[in-house]
Amino acid sequence: MQFTGFDIIIPVLVILVVLILFAGIKTVSQGYNYTVERFGRYTRTLTPGLNLIIPFIDRVGAKMNMMEQVLDVPTQEVITRDNATVAVDGIAFYQILNAAQAAYQVSNLQNAILTLTMTNIRSVMGSMDLDELLSNRDHINERLLRIVDEAAHVWGIKVTRVEIKDINPPANLVESMARQMMAERNKRAQILEAEGLKQAQVLEAEGRKEAAFRDAEARERAAEAEARATQVVSEAIAKGDLQALNYFVAQKYTEALGRVASANNSKLVLMPLEASSLIGSLGGIGQIAKEVFRDGATGVEPQRRGARPPAITPPPGSEGT
Image 1 (cartoon, helix red, strand yellow):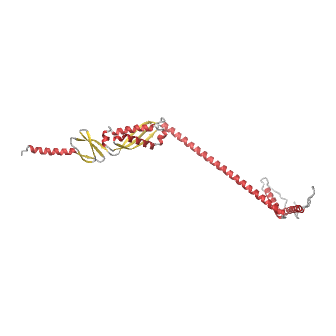
Image 2 (tube, helix red, strand yellow):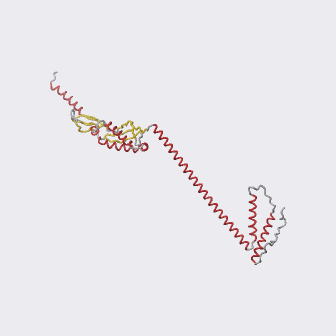
Image 3 (cartoon, rainbow, N blue to C red):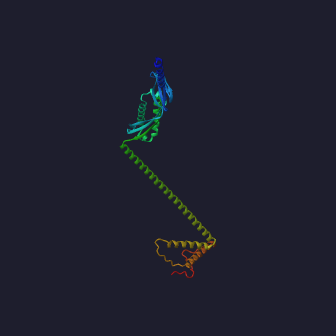
């Protein structure tokens, strides 16, 4: 069987068409975008799925990862505003939003982001004191994110986060900070102790003041009660009631005896008195008072100076032993 030229051309054309179709069909994976270049010039972007291009005229340029990516920022030394040297490292997260800009606006995108981040870390942290650097990490992260994202926006990317991982001062500086912290805590402890002592003294003084006020008030009320009792006895005597005088004198006499008996320097007390003697004495005192008030009421002239007062006859059995 002889093959003609036509029989040979047909299979060749079929194979060529199949090859052209395979060359024009492009499959893009999820999370990626491909740029298309026609004769070296960017024309369009291929999205995930099945895409067609013109074979031998169009070609795939850059394959861009559209997922969020992480970039490790290596350790670098930063000199703070107060001339303290610290070692700092960090991490940055970014995502490509425009594949064409990320591919053609900057060369080596990751290196550009890394250099930009490290430069701004030195700028931001170098404008702060060491104490601010250690206590305001959130503020540093926020400021870095704002600056880096604004600078990288023209590259078609979005910087989502910039985080400072470690801030490591030198060993001698850490030791100095520890001593400073200890001194500050000792100072606070001493201040609190002094405040507590002051408050205790104030409360003690207020307590003494209150006690003195209460004592003075008690003495004042006791004096008023004593004056009132004396007034009542005086009024009773003026009315001729000698029992009130007897009771008043007996009460004072008994209280005096009680104080004598309870004195600290008295170990033994001898009382040459009997109950009848005490009652007889009180009766005699009452008789004297009665005569004095009666004489004053009737206008009798008092006795001459030097005259002997009437004798008080004690009741039987009042003689002392």
